[in-house]
Image 1 (tube, rainbow, N blue to C red):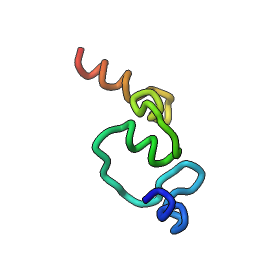
Image 2 (cartoon, rainbow, N blue to C red):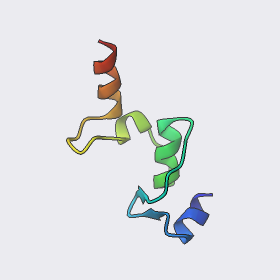
Image 3 (cartoon, one colour):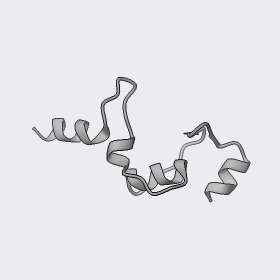
Length: 60
């Protein structure tokens, strides 16, 4: 699926240009980057806050 998306220019410079629903942040990161990743530390806001930090702050 990833190769097909790249061929269709749906992944450009590590960014998905079309909406997809993934079961986990790690799978989404792996899909975009093509290697095993920890989505909770790879996904960040524009300000650099990780998904992990956002979730930890939300639970406090």
